[in-house]
Image (cartoon, rainbow, N blue to C red; front, top):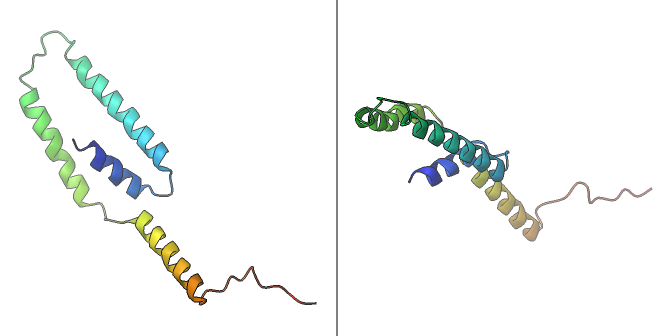
Length: 104
């Protein structure tokens, strides 16, 4: 259920990289980890008792890592800058330096 949140978080942190590439890599790693997890059950005499400890622990181990990541909204900042530039163009306050013609 947290996959969409992780996807959005990863796309936001890796902003210049296209969303499709980030989503593709995350899906590849989700699938690799799922296959490894399911493969463990094919090992003889492993049982399922260890799941009571490993699954909750896997959720809580990640939390300290998330606390050290700075929250940045790079995509939103770019969108806001574009919108501000559009407003300035409409008001006539923005000059495009490439639009000036030199007269000889």
